[in-house]
Structures are given as structure tokens and as C-alpha cells.
Amino acid sequence: MEALRELFRDYRFAVGFVFLVALAVLAFLSFFSPYDPIKRLQVPRDLPPSWEHILGTNSKGQDVFWEATFAIRNSLIVALIAGLVSRVVAVLVGFLSGYKGGFIDRILMGFADGFLVIPLFLILVLVAMLLREAMTIVNTGLLLAFFGWAWDARTIRSQILSLREREFTQTSILSGNGTMNLVVKEYLPFTTPLIFSTLISNIAWAIGMEIVLAILGLVRLEIPTLGTTIQWAITYQAMLLGYWWWISTPVILTILLLVALYWLSVSISEYLDPRMRIQRIGARSS
Amino acid sequence: MRFVRDYLIPRVLQYLLVIFCGITAVFFIPRLAGQNPILEVIAQIQSQGASLDPTAVKSLMETLQELYGLKGSLFEQYLTTWRRILTLDFGPSFFQFPTPVSQLLRIYLPWTIGLFVTSTFLSWFLGNVVGVVAGYFSEKSWSKILDAIVMVIRPVPHYILGVVLLILFAYVWQFFPAGGLMLGRRTVFNLQFILTILRYSFLPALTLTILGGVAWFQQMKLLVQSVKREDFVQYACVGGIKEKTIVTRYVLRNAMLPQVTQLALALGQVFSGVLIVEMVFSYPGMGLLLYRAVTRGDYNLVMGITVLSIITIATAVLILDLLYPLLDPRIRHR
Image (cartoon, helix red, strand yellow):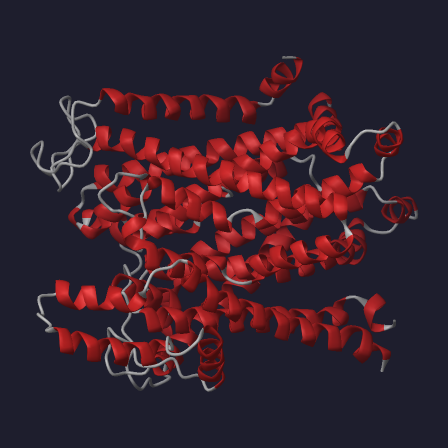
């Protein structure tokens, strides 16, 4: 609680938190939508914003506002699946690599580095192209998870490396604690904040990647997400025809969502790094 | 000679290893995905209305198997893949049948390389220079305002910033064309041609430079803030050396080295960004080619683009690694 209060003192955390809650409320509103998210021609087409349709309607005959609520919900689900599943892989690889060291470390990190140097995006596209029909929300999330763990596994590994050198590790081993016990009870609490902050940035990455996959037509386009909403607007030439309410809604929502996530993650990682915290407090008092 | 043995040879070996692993991954991952590209192509032909009788399907399948290198055991397929890559033969493209993939790549690759090199260099240079100044004077109010602006731009992905700039500068205020630069077979280099290229490349380059520059700015600022507190800088201050000299000769040179290493690590992602931005602006590079290939299910072309990108990035990393000793005297004199 004390930690939360201190975090809220940072305006970035406060703003990010408020934005994120507002967007989560929007996503939740989708459960009360009067329209079906997939069906077309439910309302008159191409209407500019009015009282009846607060963000207008699109060329597919759908209400832009209610489509957007579904889009946020689905994009958040994709990103959460991608983030959480890849966290499991990143934590396992990072812990194993950092704690065991030696041969296992070299193999795993060599693998992770390989993932980093090659243009992942292209391989992601290649796989998505073959799976096209199966790219539902869950599968898109899983595919992104498969490609999104390498960098964070490296970060977690380096923290474990430094923890292993500390005295309490020796104390714990000498008092007869098993490896599992040591890792779960001693290391996990230390690394939880780090894992959390990598989770946030991974979620942001997944949201951006989903948009690109949707633009390429590599996800199921009938399911509304932030990406597919943009893709439909572009396909129907919304920019050229001047239907600004259609194209700008998903674009602005994406920017708000990503800025909120980024500010939260920056604020949390600064809070975790005491050197930065001192600098910040020092900067404020001066 | 020790330099060659300790620095040069390991780098070149690493280069070959990265290409080897990358291409092996490209070979195995689609096969692990367990989908058959051939059935997909046939389904596509059938969905376009052509009715095929069973014998036609069978002969089509055999031709496609040969084309995709799906004949024989897994090991044989692997060897075939390598032979074709080494001879730069990726078979014909499907959406521009019978143009060979390698010919398409030869037309589009220079455009991507041009955009990639220009924007990477510009963003790295501008981001770092502004970052040094802002980091050194981090208490000034303009530095803090710059910081706040950067905090908003940083998390925006390439595609979204591209769309925003496209809407603003090509539709709302029509300063720049909304893409659609056509490639002629033969281009004449005169002033008008160069101006056309600049007009069409401005927005893509701007998007890439902003997003890249912002990332370098942030890292550089943090680096400079920590270098600034090092003893040798404090000593230079006390010794009465001019502030300008301290920033350029003492702080900049020390903070620059990690940034070069970072650049080598980030090149893969920078390149992905270039491809994505090309799609937004219909800039005639590999990104646009990729977009067309994917939307038309042209598997050969996507393979070709992926393989060529892996080689391009690995080469760029190698060049950076080879230039590094010029910047870091410690490696040169080892």
C-alpha cells in the first residue's frame, strides 16, 4: 500500500493508471452493446458523429463506438495472452539459464540471441501466413507469445545472475534448502517487479504487432480488434473519403492505450531502481 | 595480427552463424506449423473459380512440390533449400508470374536499403546529439519539456505514427503525396527524378527518424546523466576546462560507444520498422512487396524477402562491428 501511494505521487503513474482504467471500462461496456460485433448493415452507413451514434457509423453499417469497445476488449485479450504465456517461457528460460549457468546457459542464450538478431517480424508473418484460417484471438495471442520471450528472458537471467552471487543464496543452500525452494521462495519475490514491468512492455509490443498482422490480413478479419478496425477503415478508403471518425477512433484509442501502458512501466521501473528514485526526488526538491 | 585473430575472425564466424541459424529457422518453422502451402495454393486457385479435375490437381501438386522444395526427405529438402539460396534462386513469383522472385527483389531492395541506411543514420545521429545536450543540461526547463514530448511519442508503434502522419500531411494538409510512386524499368537520374524521390520518401523517412531518434535520445540522456557524475568529468570541471569541450570530448565520446553496440543489437527491429512504414506509405521497397506477397498468398516471394532480409541485417551488423575499432581505441591497440 505504501508502495502504491508513492507510485501515485508520480504523475506518469497516475495518468497512465487513469487512462488504463478508462479504457478497461470501455472494453467492459462491450458486454452491454446493443449491436452484434460481426454482423453488417445494422445501422445506416457512413453517418458522421451524432447523438444517436456518438462516434458515427462506418461503411460496413456498424456503430463505430460500439465496435471500438469490442476492439479494445479483443486487443487486450490478445495482448494479455501473449504477455502472460511469454512470461512463463521467459521466466523459465531466464531462471534456468541464470541459475544453472555453463552449458545450458550458453545453449539457451544462444537461442535467445538468434531470436533477437533475425527479423522476427518476417518469420512471424511467414508462420501467420500458413496458419491464416486458424488465427483466432487465442491463437494470435499464442503465436505472439511464441516470439515475444527472448529479450525478457535475457533481462530476467541477468537479475538471477546477480542474485546468485549474493550471500543469502549460500546461506539458503547451506541450510539445506532445495533448489526449487530457493528459487520459488527466495528469488521469485525479488524478480516479481521486474517480471511485471517486462509484462507491461510486452503487452504494448503485442498490441502493436497485432495491428501489423491485421493490416496484412493475417488474422481473422471479421473479429473486431484495434488492428482489424484500422484495416477495414483503410480497405474502405476511409481516409480518402473523409470518414475521419472511422479511421481516427482506433488510431487514437491505440495511442492512448500504449501511452498509458508505457507510462506505467516507466514509472514502475524507476520506482524499482532506487538510484533513479533518488534522482527524481532530488530533482523535485530542487 | 592479434587483432585479426581476436576480433576479426570471431566476428566473421558469428556473421556466418547468424545467417545459418536464421535460414535454418526459416526452413523449419513453417514445417513445424504443420500446414501445407501446396494445399493452400490449390484451395486458392479453386476459390478463384477454376474447376480442377483430379489428374490436374495431381500434376499441379507435383509441380508445386518441386517449386517449393518439398520433394524428398527432410534432409534432402534442407540441402535443396541451401542450394537455391546460394544461387539466389527462389523460383517464380506467383502474383507476377513468371517473373523470378530474385528479379523482383533486385528492383525493390535498393529502395529499402536507401531508406534503412538514411533513416537509421539520421535518427541515431540526431537522437544522440540532442540526447547528449539534454542529458548534460537535464535541470534546464527546455530539457524537461523535450523529455515530456518524447514520453508521448516513444510508445507509439511504427504503423500508427505512419498513419497519423499520412492523415495529417497527405490528406488534411496535402503537402506530400499519399504514396504510389511507380517504378519504371529504367530510371534516368536527373534533378526532377531526385526531387520526386525526395517528395515520396520524406514522410516514411520522417516517421522512421522520429521513432528511432526518440529511442536513441532517451538512452543517450540516461547514459550522459551517469557519465556526468564520473570522476574524470568532475575533475575536468574543477580543472577549468570549457563546458563545450567537456561535453564533446569527454562525455560524448564515452557515452557514444555503448550506443554503437546498441545499434548493432537493434538493427533487426529497426529493419522490421522500415518494412512496416513502407507498407503505410506504399513506398516501393521490400515492405510493400511483402504486403503484396502476403495478401496474394505468394509463398515463394515471402521466403525470398525473409532470406534476403536476414542476410541484409547480418551484413549490416558485421559492418558495424568492423567499424567499431575505429571508434574505440582500446580495441584497436589491444
